Structure formats: structure tokens, C-alpha cells
Length: 314
Image (cartoon, rainbow, N blue to C red; front, side, top):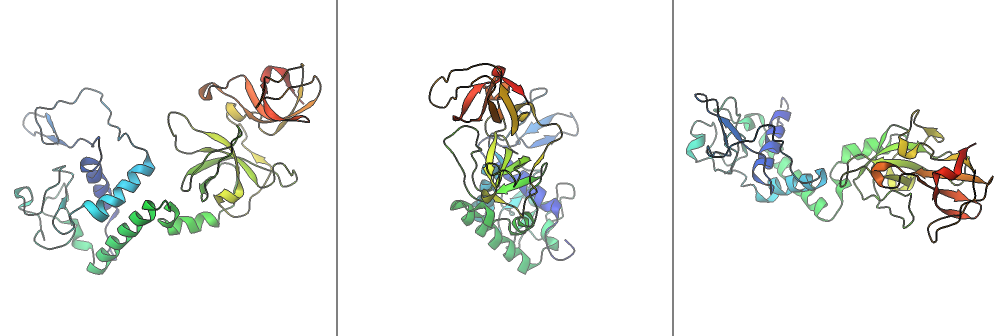
């Protein structure tokens, strides 16, 4: 704010206001009655909050981000409308609700301080920087409209491009990746993933690959699987690393096993085992992914699914 830009406080208020007025299941605006101590929800004193009720937006972060940029770039009446988390609905600066708001007659962005109702938080925003902000919001909206999310965060992208890929770090997906075979991670540009294992360059089958899981859930559970370095924003990788205590679902990833029993293949996608043969396990099923008791990997005969009970660690 000291250099003519909006403060982080102002941006937080912009986010809250967006959630109150621009999504299908809006964030409740709670106004406390100082006399009774009761709350009005979105200005309606008849609405009652249920004890312990938790609000959720019903949309994932990517969708909310896209809608946030679009709202302030195209829908918000810039220069007339007031960002007010106190009111919690869309009102112009001429409304009686903002009778004490400073600069409300100016054709500029208006952000009401919910604590000091006279203060318009754009009092620190230089006119040139306000125009830059509007242009940035529009550019971000246009980039997301054509599915180019990485164009929105230039600085973050540059930092990630210079960051080596290591176990425990996060990586940003730059290219869509999908494989029809089980065991690979399905991702889209802009997805954030947690790196669980980095393939060793000494092993041709692992070189240039990492095992990762999605940082944000799609549905009810995280997804995990193999992904090539080429799909990620990262610098050179240090291979052969793994978590000290890997999650149960990948506890045996890239570890050698031997078959302790003969197993017949159940058909396409499965692989049969012969007692004593070496088995390379790439993925171990878990309860939350509905594949507990099964593993995916490779043998001399090919790659596919097989029961874990038929393996012993070597």
C-alpha cells in the first residue's frame, strides 16, 4: 500500500465479497444485532443459522479462481459498485448504506472498510496502478477462458521453473498428461501435485518419471500415479529419492518383490505370476481407492494387476 497499490487486506475483502455475491451457494453475510446479539443472514432477520453449520462453496479452487477474475473484470460495476462485506450484496456507491463513505462520488474502485465505515480503502491506490489492476484482471480472465492458467501467474511459474524436483516438494503441471493404463496420474495444466518419489536416472524404466499425488482433491480422495518430468514445471531432478515413510497406498512403489505363489491372469489388464519370479511393484492399492489387496507392476511377461498376497519382499 505504501507504493500506491492495494493492501492485502483490500484483496481479502474483494475475495469475501465475491463469495457473498457471485457464486451459486454464496457465503452468508452475518450482521450482528448489538441489542439482541442475534445474527441476520444476508440482511434477512428471518433466516436462522443452524448450530454448528459449516458453509462450503460447492466449487473447487480452480473454478472459484476463474469466476473471481471474471467477476471483477466483466461483471463488477467498476466505478459505481462498492465492495462491502458488511452489506454483503451488490449496491452502488449512491446507496444510503454508504452515506459516510469517502470518495464515493469518484468514478473509481470502491472498497468499504467494514471497521471504519468512512474509509474507502482505495485511498492508497494510485490511478495508474488501478488501471494496471483492471488490465491484469481482464488478461487473467482471457487466459483462463482459453485454458492457459500458467499465463496468469508469471512470477510463480518462473520460480517453479528454477526449482529442482525433489521428494516432498510440490510441482505445477504445465502439460496435460493421461495414459489409458492404470498406475499413471491424470493431470491438467495448472494442477498442483505433491512429489512422492523421483525416479533414478540409473534405471531406464524410471528415468524422467516421478510418482506423485494431487495436492487438491477431485471428488473425495487424492489421486496418485506416475507422471513424466516433461509435463511439469521444474528444473533438473535429483533421482532415486523416496519419502522416509511413504503412504500405505504406495508403500511398495518401485521395490523388488518375488512371487510366493502361482497366480493365473484374470484377463486383459492383469498379469499372471510364477512362484519365485521377480516382480517390480509400481503401485499398491488402498481402501480409499477401492483397490485394496491388489498391486500394479511388471514381470518378465508384461505389466498389469496382481494380488498382493502372492508377493514377498526381496
